[in-house]
Image (cartoon, rainbow, N blue to C red; front, side):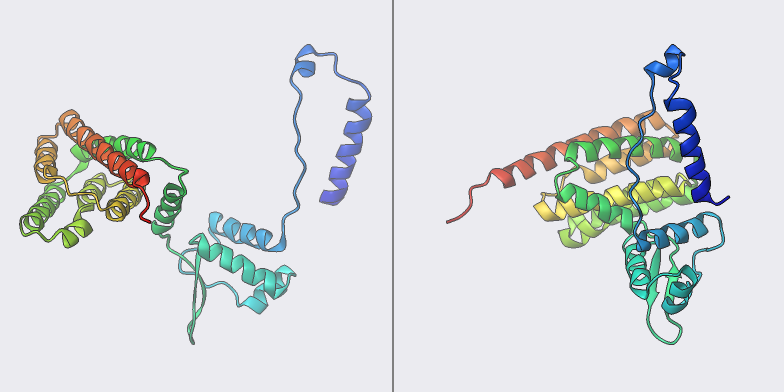
Length: 274
């Protein structure tokens, strides 16, 4: 019996046995399942689903080349247009990349955290994510990161953080604010790296980059206490005092959030020039 026939048989049996004779069980009468209309998938969606399934089951791995467009269309029994649409969709999602040339083709990506950064950044620009929500999430992630870093960070990790603080201080004193804005988020990324948790590092790096872009977009004046705050946090990290480091970081991020909100409000309420 095929899958379709089995479904039809099951549906018919259900209709004859269950709907015609309602359950006398009061629990069954109170809680009824809710079914939704099934939306048939388009060809390119099914192709994407199959490629993702091959990835999840390990038959496709990062760096693997997919069959050529014509071959893939023949294997799947679809048009080349459907294959092209699927590849474009997977490229946007960061699952595959296409390369031209003799050794070109479509390859499975190794994973690009910038996809997450761009997606969240778009949500911020569209007003779907507020600065408050962004700050709240950063505080939660950084709190966990600091706690883990206090447990796992090596002297090499902590020395790298100190060198980064020295660089930001040097750029601040020299007035090189353009270059400073490029390096300003490295501190958070280095703390995240010290956790030895690649998922935490990816999320923190993404949110830090979004905040950096926000700072650049609204031309926020640099805070004068950044270097001192970071030196205090580093001191607490070296002492393995997670609570003190978290308190210092939380207060700093909340101050930054207040500054961002005030600046953004000033920009949005500024009258347009005639």
